[in-house]
Length: 235
Image: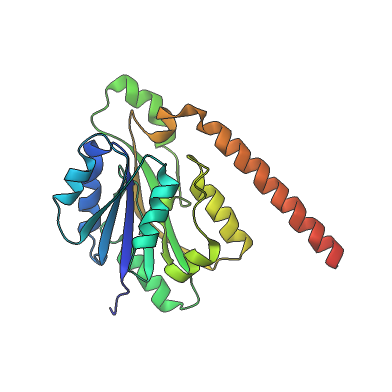
């Protein structure tokens, strides 16, 4: 396969416990990315040192604790690949994730982005009571997760940067904008991402993030009403 150059961007904030396993899941791809950009978002633990210990193709970028959206944007700004992929610092890719998605783009040159199936798993170090609280979430699956995405760089820039005002839901906001611009995407039926559920997930550390989700919902409903109004006026 004449593979494209893929830049993988991993934002991390105090994620030393899981980061090495996450990076290994990227390095273990049957189609390895050209570079792995770990963006240290103001960590106070050993996250940056763990990432640097891997050496090439891992590169470490650092910033103050500005949140995952800003970290992803910094990664994109420094990425050299013509395709972009994102992964949270506690999640895992399946080994054939990239090769299957690249094949979809090869088969359909008009395809701008590819998603894949996502499954949650409970991190094995949790005790029974913690695991029980996460059981309902662990049973859920889907496909619209940032870690399941592969996108052409020019298509990403057409949609625009992640909203740095949001500490939660930045991918929901980005995907809503992508949908408005009719991003051409496909979904492979294969499992490509395993999302780790653990005691320090961002949404558990910062429960006030629900307000971000509610704000996003209001914004998107407003956009839909504006679009519907324009459509009515033009008809």
